Image 1 (cartoon, helix red, strand yellow):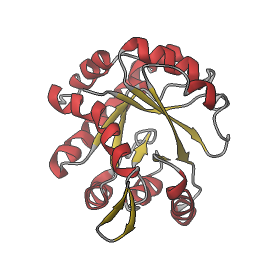
Image 2: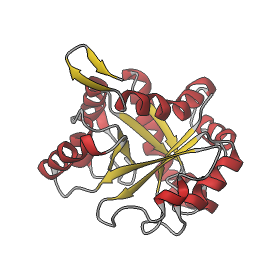
Image 3: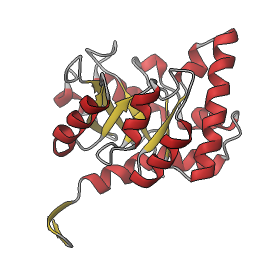
Length: 227
């Protein structure tokens, strides 16, 4: 099965180049990585070098950072045809919901940075628009004490909504350095600590490849695909 790390941040957003991230991810057992730098920091450095790394696919996407709902929808519409993968930086309740309501968005990233999570309305919208929710396990690795407990409570509540509405789910570390990366086996084990079924966790790591394949299909008209 092809496992992808779906939400990495490379230079200048993170501390490592895309090629360094690709080398580390290949060693850990990934088939591909998706580098989604924030639009506010600019395009990742060293993309051409990263694509020369053998044995792993390096995909460059965008992570939208929006000030409000209108701003988010405008950016998503303008970037959709320019990217194989489009994420939104969540955390704010209104941004979480707006991202789930936009069919141009592939992934709601970092939705649990705030204390509210996605909520029922956003979950319904994500189901209708096929927007995937990211289980970002980076805080599980970095946080300690009360902060980690509060974060886990929000995540567990949202996982109940994800099961109830059968939402698309992806798993990531949100890594900004190759040292933040964890193997697919480690991420599955961490996800299972929240009560997520192992098969569902494995599917979540493989889902990015399916989304990329769909986004790369091109249509000349309704029902006519361009090969």
